[in-house]
Structures are given as C-alpha cells and as structure tokens.
Image (tube, rainbow, N blue to C red; front, side, top):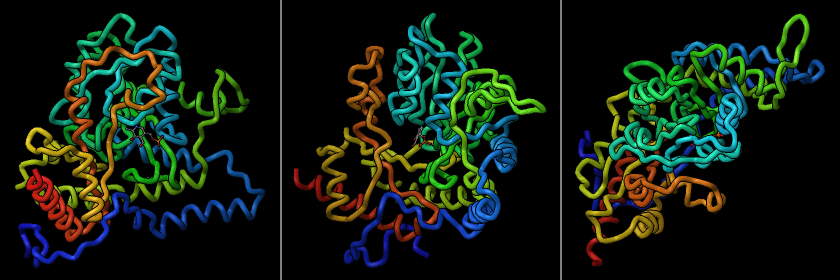
Length: 397
Ligand SMILES: Cc1ncc(COP(=O)(O)O)c(C=O)c1O
C-alpha cells in the first residue's frame, strides 16, 4: 500500500482537474424517491404542500441527532439567524459580537436589525471565535454573541457558557458547517440559546439545495421562532395569530429529503473524515502549510481549511493559488474574506478592528476539496501539486 500518499511515478504525474466542489453522490435514490413521493401525491390530489406533517418528523429526527430538545426547520441558515435576531428583539443601539472570519450573514443578521456589529478575534489554532477576545468587547449594550462552529469544528462552548452566565448575554451559534459536529461526544444543537444550521447544497447534508434549522433546549425560544417563521400562526382547534411573523418555511419535499439525508449523515461524515485524515497525513511533511486543528475532537469535517504559512514563504497566497489552479488544475475555496472587506459593510457601523489573528488568517486560508467522493488519488494529487507549487514559486526568488 502507498503510505506516503505520493502518487506512483511522481516524476511523471499526469495532470488532471480537481474541482473544489464535487457534489456528485450527494443525492442518492432514496432522496429522489422521497421528494418524488411528495410531488406525486400532491399532483394526484390538489397539489397542496401545506400543512406539513413531514416537517414535524424531520424536526424530531434532527433534534435527536443533534442532541437537543427542539428543532425548528426553516428555508436557510441565513433566515434562521435573522429569526433569532428578531426573537431577541435586536434593534438600533444594541451591539452583537461576531467573528470577522465568517460568511456575511453571521454579521448581516445584526446589521439588518440596525444593531452595531462588534468584531472579536478568532483563536489562532481553531479559527473559531475566541471567548477571551469576546470578553474584552462586551459592553452594557451587548445583546448577543454569535460564534461560528468554523469548518465543522465545535466552538469553545464552555468558554461561551461562562461568558453568557456572567454577563447574561444569549449565545446564538452559527452552526451552518456543523451538522454532525460533536463537542465532548455530544451534538452541538443544544449549545447556547440556539444553533442555526444550513442545509444548502454544499453543506454536510442538504434539503433540495436550500434549507436550515434553529435548534435549542429552550422551549419558549423555540416556540417564539416557530411562530415568527410562519406568520405568527399558532395552530390548534382555533387558528390564532399571536405575533407579527414572516414566511420562512421549508417545503414538504425538502423536509422529506431532510429525513433521508439525515438517515445517512453519519456515513457521509465518516467518508469526509477519511478524506480529512488522508489530507492531513498527505500534507504533514509540508512545513509551509498549517493544517487545521481538531481532527480528534468531533470535527464535523465540513471544510478542510489549510493555511499557507506566509511567514515561511516569499510569495503571497494569490500567487500560490493561481499557480495551483493554472498549472495543476487544483481548485480551492476561500473561507472567508474578512466580513468587513465586503463593500456592503463599508458604511456599516462596526467597532474599530482589533483582530490580528483574523487579519492574518484571511491572507492565508484555503479550503481544499473535501467531499465524500474525494478519492485517495485526489488527495495524493492535491498534496503533490501543493508541494510542487511551493517548490516552483520558492525557487523563483
Ligand atoms: C458560516 C455560515 N453561516 C451561514 C451561512 C448561510 O447559510 P444558508 O445558505 O443556508 O443561508 C453559510 C453559508 O455558506 C455559512 O457558511
């Protein structure tokens, strides 16, 4: 067996394209059957997709899988975060602490409510929001903290629990990457006041391309967001409208595929873990690459975020990634540019940055292909391409 993960005949490697996203295999026959069953039944009756018994089944199964009491499914993680901000009544004058190394909506959900976003730094090892950095940013106006389980690695839940208790500030986790993530052997759905999951197409599981959920152990909060996501309706013998709400519902075929996707999520994560471990081994002798932390700690293996150690090389990440793409056809993802670097945030009221780890990380990160279908040979090829790229660019100096 090839234990070095160098492809055979390394001097004469045949170049081939390795895309960043390889979603083939994500849909299996059972997912297609589940969606078709709903659509066929709807076509044969009056096409009514509402009300939604499948939703209840999926919510229960998700809560069980993520080790929490309640799950409310919605149409995306972005809307899940929006609903949490509404449920907390976040408004102008409030401050919400978030990482800068995240997808825009982690911060956007607070901006949309007129609140001020306060960026705190991430931990240099895990790239998750640092409770110590957050502690330094808390003021009497802080109304919520949104850590991200970055790349599928659990955030420091004990650290945030302690902060939440001391300052009486709710923690809403952005769990977009974290279906199947474990913290001390347990799912992270019950951490903080709530967790916001994504089932968008490139996540660990997907509900027909879009979808999300809010998990919680708090029954009042769950009821609040359950009402908000569906026009404030309370169903019962008599329909009531108890609050002004919205329509952020998931469709019935989506909920049905949520069940089939969830049934195999552990197998999918095992495949991702196999690929993650192989990538880790394949890159272990490349001193210029910083490998991700947390592989032995319940990592949900959503993303393999490596970093180019820019202190050890004489070239920048852009040059490196261009060479990797153009010469070796290896594509990478970027998780993430700093939130404040997007033009929409230029005029946003945010705290003066004090985030050196984030500033460095956003110049270094590169997500390598990590999919259940990524093969041993793909991993070996990627590692070889990285090694050769460093050697070529380094020797030019
Ligand atoms: C960290 C993070 N939060 C939130 C989201 C938004 O998820 P959705 O597309 O389900 O709204 C994403 C999507 O990629 C994400 O990566």
